[in-house]
Length: 207
Image (cartoon, rainbow, N blue to C red; front, top):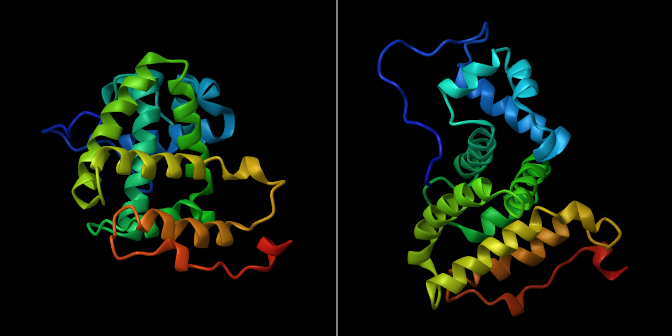
């Protein structure tokens, strides 16, 4: 994955809090929480610094600024999802299911906020473009058919899943949506997969 953050510095070890959490990690967590709670525009440098228990200038010791930090928080969330879900084995169906897990709900909100902000802020769009390109190179070798459209379709589905809470009025639990979308995205990377043979067994889908 392409990274927008600076590489680890050589020299003195990073400062940590009483729990042993480094400043960079605290900033990522603070940026994540601030963006989820207040949205991209409301996640201010002052608020993030206060949550991380650091001075505002400390942010610039680790990141290029507020935007870079917020995008890095999104990358970090996806990186943790990858580590917990599928590691080095690229499994599109597993990713789709994980995107719809209750544990990933806040991360869905963060990713949605970042992509909406990219429509208004060029800097966000540029950072996301670098990130998307890196991720696309990772997935392209396993794509069925033309890698470009295949991977783009996969990413578009995942981005759509980040807005699933906005469709609360439409019947269907998160589990049923996950069961429906998993074989669809699997077919993008597995030529033996047959999404048409998959039936969703969920009472909510018949309501």
